[in-house]
Length: 497
Image (tube, rainbow, N blue to C red; front, side, top):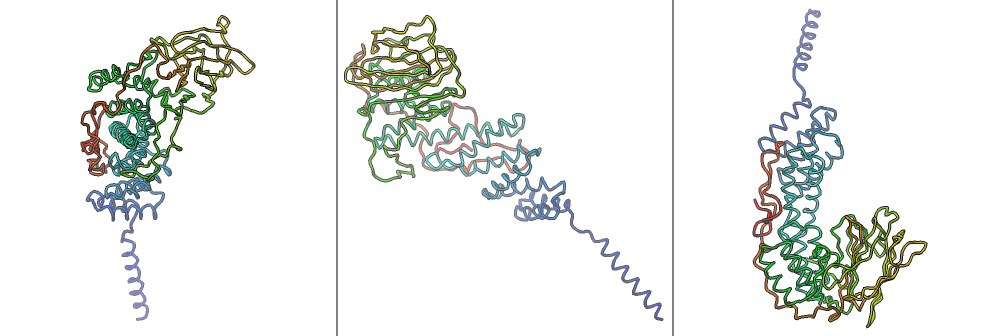
């Protein structure tokens, strides 16, 4: 009897063990399938939880990597952009060789892109999105996401350009013309291919004229005629040039000279662009009032305004990366009539420093070209006696070549390094009445108003724009965009849906 009872007990125990062994425990694949089904049904929170369980319990599962990526996509689809940005950054850091890098990079960019505001608002997310889109275009040029990124790059660049343009307009309305000039020139230096470029160049020309920089304003209006010939701006520029009646230096593209005189160079290999001007010609711009203006735009005090801008390395003593010994081949005046620039032709890029002494009857510019030797047949004393130029003296010492250019009094000058071929162009703004060309009344406040444009920063947000869905199929959709030309933004200043 006892033996039979023991047998029954053992049999029950075995049945219990068999029942337990047939009950399936969750595996990494189970979690992945369940989470993916939840994701496809737009249940993003439970999908995130199950993906996370897979990662925590089965960190070496073949599904773990995609689970990490899908967590970021689920956060993005649920509009939790802060968590999405963190998840995508973690994925890129933890899986630098993953085949899904283009997907993670694209949706990291889109997580910033969806938070872009109007052009008159902070553009931090625009800058971060642009940085990621450019990385995708460079690192994954064959990916379908690269084509989508090119569209968004154009939109981001236009938003940043319009943002800086609005700040320039703000400064100009406050009569802070020097700060306005800096901002407007920056737009043309960084975003010359955006639809706002002609508006910006026109505004820059007016700002230069209102500061009394009539020669520079004439160069800007000439650039308008040259770069935007069949527009309203070209017609107005022609009229304003007749009013200004200033000499035009055509040795280089006038836009390049305008940017150089504002402290910018469009030559990324240039080691220095130095701009100097008489304090007598600067408008009293600082109102000393509130630190912030309309829309939260900061008011730049005069003491903080940039006198020199950097592009490719800039300073009082400019150096290009590894400039070697060079030869000064020729010294000549520009081909304009009358000439307002002197050009030093060189055999290669050089580093230099300079100093200007300007008095009531004359001005002297001293250039020290380091590791430069004058050509054997180059005259050491060149007499100009043309326009504002008197003569030029060339002397060599142990450190390089010293050049002294004597002119009539000037209010402003810019030293512009140029390449292809290598040369230094020094352009001057003479004092009124010092050139052979007579002065005339300027545009001032009587200039024609610009045509209506789409710069109304009133309503709308990039967050409302149509974006690609959060699936892994990049062909499923993209934000509207295109190449530079027509605006990629709608009338509110937001990306077009």
